[in-house]
Image (spheres, rainbow, N blue to C red):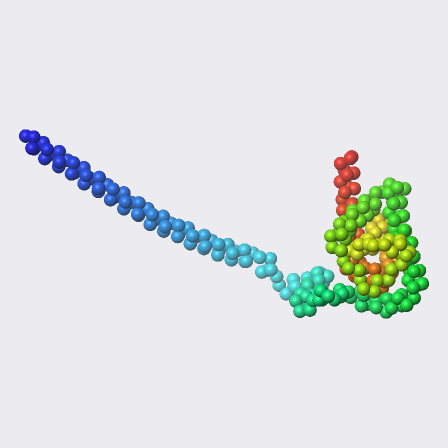
Amino acid sequence: MATDTAAVTTTIALHNRSSELTRRAANNNTNINNHVNGLDGDREVVSQKKTMSIFSGREVLRKASFMSWSMKDVVHVARYHWIPCVFAAGLLFFMAVEYTLRMVPAYSPPFDLGFVATKSLHSVLASWPELNTLLAALNTVFVGMQTAYILWSWLVEGRPRATISALFMFTCRGILGYSTQLPLPQGFLGSGVDFPVGNVSFFLFFSGHVAGSVIASLDMRRMQRWELAWIFDTLNVLQVIRLLSTRGHYTIDLVVGVGAGILFDSLAGKYVQKRTTCCC
């Protein structure tokens, strides 16, 4: 009887063991199948994403603005937007110039097209010091006129925009001028009556002479003082020619001076408007 019971117990144990092994094998197969299916699913998702990306790219290209352009549109742009077209041509031209131009060696003086254009005037002033001194004195008077007008607009007329613009401009000029100190141009013709008076050192980049004149001229136009504005613009052009002829500034100093005058006048206008709105 004991033997039969042991046999039955052994049979049941073997059966349970067999069932456990079968269950584990089934679970392993299920895990393998799930892993394979997961990989297949990932591949399918990646494939779908690639398909959607290609489709989206084609859709964007199909809806792109230039896809609807016609020859009529091109003619319209060339006719009514010729200024940007000229600048586009200039971009292509100067890209070719820049990538083919031999750079100025470190031991050579900078190349300045304005110096080339005023070579004859430079020779005249170099050989005629009295004329150079006279022109320097007249230029200093012009700088005094700029300063007087800018201060007058604030202290007398109560309009601080031009003064604030000049403060912005000269502070920025000081930062940039000190940050990159350009060498004095060869052939510089100084004068004791030039501004800064006494022929002392000064920042080359950018021209405060030109920027100050632009600030004053813009304020005159706002006040509809057209004749005075044109006089200042004319004197500013003559000032540019003199500064190039005496090698008192590089061409880039003068051009950026014009841009600086316009920029800081605009910034000062926004500042005054904002402060007026806040105070009100």
